[in-house]
Amino acid sequence: MEASYLQRARYAYAPKLPACLAGEISNIKVEFGEPTSSASDTESLKAVFKHSFGKPIASFRKGEGSLSARALSVGVILSGGQAPGGHNVIAGLYDGLKRGNPRSTLLGFLGGPSGLIDNAYVELDDETVDRYRNTGGFDMIGSGRDKIESQAQFAAALESAKLHRLSAVVVVGGDDSNTNAALLAEYFLDKGAPISVIGCPKTIDGDLKNEYIETSFGFDTAVKTYSELIGNIMNDASSAKKYWHFIKLMGRSASHIALEAALQTHPNLCLISEEVEDRQLSLNHIIEEICEAVVRRAQNGQDFGVVLIPEGVVEFVPEMKKLISELNDIMAAHGEEFEGLRSFDAQGAFLERTLSRASIALFEAMPEEISKQLLLDRDAHGNVQVSRIETEKLLISLVEKKLGKMKAQGTYRGKFSPLGHFFGYEGRSAFPSNFDADYCYSLGFCAFALIAAGLTGYVSFIRNLTAGAGAWQAGGAPLTMMMHLEKRQGKSKPVIRKALVDLKGKPFAAFAKERARWAVGTHYVNPGAIQYFGPPEVCERTTITLQLEREP
Image 1 (cartoon, rainbow, N blue to C red):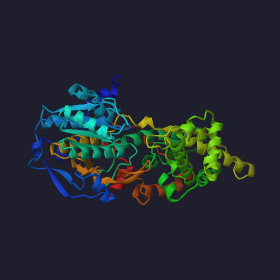
Image 2 (spheres, rainbow, N blue to C red; image 1 turned 90 degrees about the vertical axis):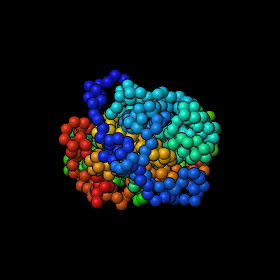
Image 3 (tube, rainbow, N blue to C red; image 1 turned 60 degrees about the horizontal axis):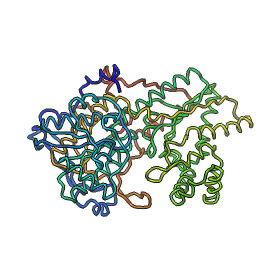
Image 4 (cartoon, rainbow, N blue to C red; image 1 turned 180 degrees about the vertical axis):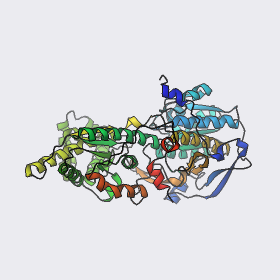
């Protein structure tokens, strides 16, 4: 890609580091806490991670250095979907390596974990890294969703690492990718290979967080990008005064994106998947809540509005969850037979014989377009790909149907003109905000420090994020402490536990306090585009979620 004027200007931005990582590495000291456990399933996880379970938290301080200054050879992998700031993780790692010893080298494995398995790589140099500093995307080395899972793949990864005499491998990814990093670290230890494996927490969904990972990188930029688009639509809705906008946002398992976007923009309605599940809200109940807002706003002469929808909400609605689960089981058991059915009518007849009575009734009641989307190819885990289900269109169709009945009964006299949107890929590869540029650079530099401290099986963390970057705290947390066992395709597997929206937490409470007012009135906020230049309160602010969570 050719560089835009903004990209050229962003090259000049110098990301900030925590004070504990700034300066010479001889002045960086590592300190250790008490041994750690796991999120749950402790005994089972001890058996899986015989060599790496129970390690202590590592923290960096200013002091007489305990980091190695020897030349290191490190490989880096970008794993999973894109997130703004990935290039700065690599830049921070690269700069750390060169500061530690100018003879250190960094290899970028191409296309994700498969690059390590297949030994597809490029050696990164000053010119390459400089070209991607402070830019969005993962195009420096590419990414992929492959996992290192089979014994043959683990052996191939070790062979590649030995071939290049790697001191370490850094895996930049989400919960699944960092679980994979933990398993790779354990495999290297079991084989007696002195090769460190360090993770970095990435996902725009915001569901990789805990006491030590206050937020995953890319979340800040992605939600600010979506909120800008939502704010623009709100301005248009307030101007035209005749459209209801149903906006689907990324977030399959967790609704952090939808919640943060709601806090930033004040929509009329925002669904939170975790609340839908907690309250066991049926599809009909959700439609009734939307229709109530439409009717009340129409009575005030406001035939317009904005509804935010997390993409994964359909899997949290009880009857939809049951239908999807039954479809997943049918696809797993009768995949080839089902694929051989040429027409939708033939597929429907097959499902009528195999689905439960309640599920087939729901399947047939939905718009045909949505029913077909439920039958699309499954993901690697055998689950429906919810991002391909146009939930916004499903809700629009059902709301239109109910409002039509209400109009016939004389209980609704407004005009309902709906428009559907999906904001997803627009936020994954944006220019990182100043916060993400600094945060990602610090995560990468911290990964170098963990390697130089001789650690493995850790995830790089930066804490105290609502303070200025100089006051941020840096260190590493053992990946095993974040794990539990989860059923995947019928088998119990170690997985880093996803962080869902806490319905008792401060961010949700702030939203719940205002949503009744937002539903009836028009209190829209347009936060505008991400700002890279200007006063700190404009260009260095963090998300509202993070500010609320870190309040005393």
